[in-house]
Length: 330
Image 1 (cartoon, helix red, strand yellow):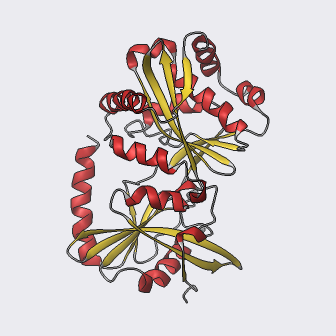
Image 2 (cartoon, rainbow, N blue to C red):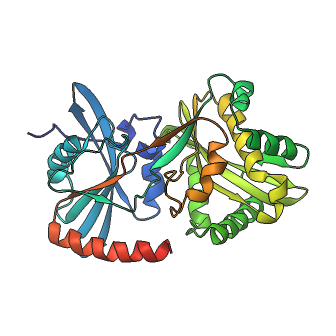
Image 3 (cartoon, rainbow, N blue to C red):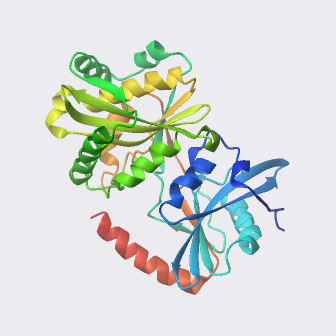
């Protein structure tokens, strides 16, 4: 059995509450050498679209990646069915398709040809804060620690929206690279960040992006990059100066962003990235206490799965990838 797969234009992607499945994200990833293809398919009587990113690795060999998708697929058997149907649409040298699936873990057995990877590209866990009650209602659901830090920051910290000043972007980026050294993650380039912000001005791409900068006096002490869709705001990147931790810039920025998300008409705020509660070695574990302080619901996806198209090349790639990821994450 196969699905009826049909190529569509990137402008045909309509999953507007998932920024990673939009024309906007295809344009973002083009800067990093990813080609993009979009397809429609039907399952269980409903039609869906999927964005697939493709990148050449070496010689004629390439990989395919579905960020936070595919929509409408609810289990690994259906994922296997979709990957089998997509084979003829992918480049001949594509040796696997990776998916950070959107559904929660159901403990199902892996079908033949589907492998799970321990290094997902997108975070498996997140906190989703409902915004429908307005700012006062949202604030009332915060934990005591978050409320206290926000109140403490109000008189000391000023927050502004970035409007294109290059020195402000440079100062924020220096704070971001400082944060990457402190928290041991690999930073994106300043050009990549600017690319995201500039693309977010093009409403036709389906996503709006904003940089909010926190100040004390004339000093940049932190900042958040946030993506807005029709119903959802997503906290994508953040940075803060540790020497100003007593002023609570991270809490001030999140509270400011939540208020802006309400003004945008968003119903949900996605804090994008926490660790499983029982995994103290997880690279996102240090963020759990902070992000859960804003209330909301903790959600954990099933994980990241590879649909293997060329077992031999895939085995060699995974061997190299495992060594590289283990080294990168300490």
